[in-house]
Length: 351
Image 1 (tube, rainbow, N blue to C red):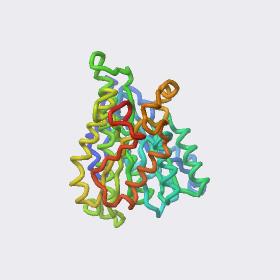
Image 2 (image 1 turned 90 degrees about the horizontal axis):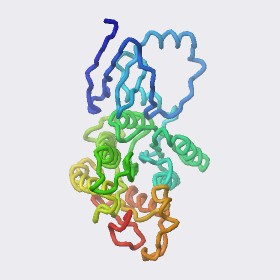
Image 3 (image 1 turned 60 degrees about the vertical axis):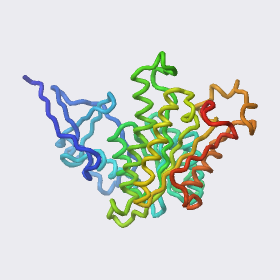
Image 4 (image 1 turned 90 degrees about the vertical axis):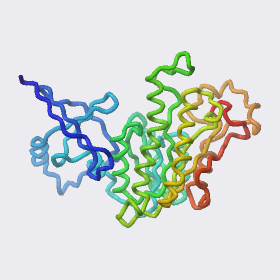
């Protein structure tokens, strides 16, 4: 039988070498490829021998893995080399001696506002984005660099554990991580179910994967890099984590979204003590209605008289709250959740 199947044992992110892939060959190699946490780098022409590169590439096996229904393939630089190591090797060529903050879902909206503000305050900003948001992320990086700041884009889907691990390895190669903003989130799943009656598993899994599992995984990986107890590279000095939550978690508007933010709040409450023992603070900001793409279809008909301040919030205002908690200005805050909703009671549509 010409069909052959080979399998490599999978190991978790806790393995410093990363994850082994599961390689499956059925007569011919898979060809789909997905970029994971790979900021663009330039090849040194003095070291590039095109024919030699092609010969080496042809001699290397192609490994593949199935992630979230996608088939990912990669040609490792060495046998058994993993996604995390490959991503670290592809980190920006110029490392940074500034403190690094990683912001998930930072290509636009609140995440982009946080990136711009924190860069102006001297942070090196790692801008996480999905593949579909690459143009926005690249434009944001260019804007920050043009303003004298320091930033780089890191592509990864926070709902996928291998992506998260690869991203943090790349960030580690770039600089010393001191801050994390868990901002990435989605309002609805692929089918848009918004009530108990039409609830379906696909929507639940999609929202929980991004809004709950993503922040949990990112917090775990950030702890490894920030904690001097867990990291012996001499750079770990503790740090600060800020979750972007929502007041909707209190009452439950936007059923699945609200449930996911409630889970995020509970995770934070449970993590405070453990993280504090590693010199890490964790807090949250719960925005009210904020002028982002998330609510763009609602704004034209919304009755702003329901908000005591009489207007929608701006991403830059939410970013100011994040910066307060992330920086030393919030040094005695851990386990806090600041509601920024223009005076509107918690739980009334998006906070």
